Length: 120
Length: 234
Image (cartoon, rainbow over all chains, first blue to last red; front, side, top):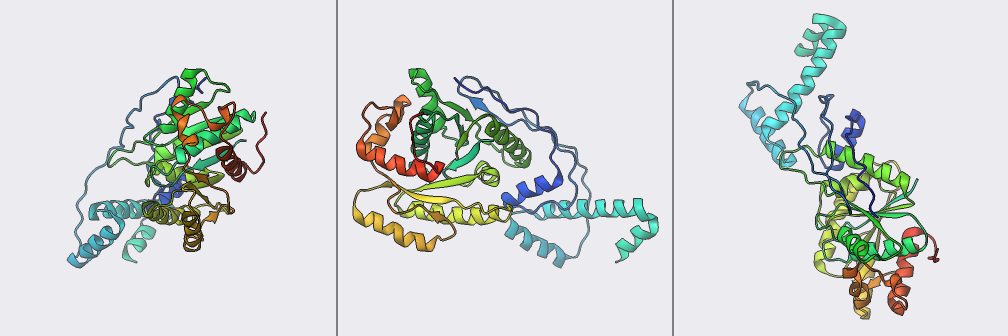
């Protein structure tokens, strides 16, 4: 009578797909390649059977402190209010993005390229 | 590959689950392989299929309940990825996947709108429903910018009183929401007891030996709107 649940473990999608999903939610896509997302089971229930959702493990993060000018922080707060994001969340996105860009340039062009990025 | 059709996007109580269930019954009687994919937290359509299954009514229907329960702080994207994958896999196994989405803005609605082939919006004649339509227009604009096709939901009047004034009111609303397509005049579901009477037992109007004539006529119109063909018993 009922279709058996077909939902299974789903491998991480590509960044393009994830960006599309985030845009659909009205979110800004994170500018960096996100860390590999753990497989996500979706709670599915057929008429006859059910599966329970399981929590996806969260990738570990480390906390860093950032110093910035008060007016920049105020701007971030204003932008965050418009986006519904906290200043910390915005900084996390910015820092991760720029850190990945820096890492890519360093690997490709070495210290000179990385320094140029930082100075520019 | 089957067709992914969203029925909903409107406020709760607009008759969307009822419309979806009647359409699913008609589609099954027409001999099509149809499944209800219930993304609504209330699981009304899913329960309808449970009731139908319990009563042993033929043709049988199938249903999946998959409300996206996104916890506060949880990233909904992995769930969305899984949902889209499953919707596509389900569409591969059926002629039609009728998706019931909740009445309010939620990730399930948005993700389904990303991949649905079409969407019909039952609109009840109340100011609350019109406000909800306004919210949906905003969501639609967001979704449309992520799609490359001409996906455009179609609105049809639902729970309409047989009074003429309400029908005329839709003409005025149409002009305000040109972002959506509107069903041709006369395609609507009125507030009829025939639509509600059999839902509890998992039956639709077309399961009845002698369907209510007016209810039948209205459902035939909506059926053609959704499935682009006349209803024929399979």
